[in-house]
Image (cartoon, rainbow, N blue to C red; front, top):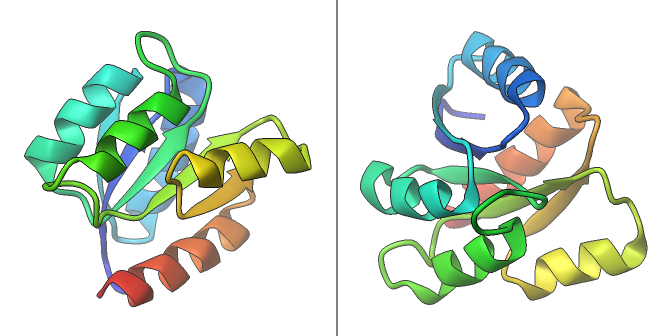
Length: 125
């Protein structure tokens, strides 16, 4: 996978730190938003290659943030991977229905997440 600019939208500091450190170690550039509203704003201003979106967020949840990003001309082409501790089939359907391009469960298994990111980045290239 080529080096990508990744926007992490995550309100949990431990999750943010762990994920951003691992992605930076792989050579990626990381921007961080701590709630859904900030995530939508930063996706517009930062123009990331991909977004990792927690679904349980303050201000604006991940489902609504994903919907807004996919409706906006400037951000609709950015792949979004939903990250959630909810591992039920309905949760995956709900995330994909909100416009997320893929879905992964927490705790994040970094090798699996990197594979999903590579596939989406190759598709959007």
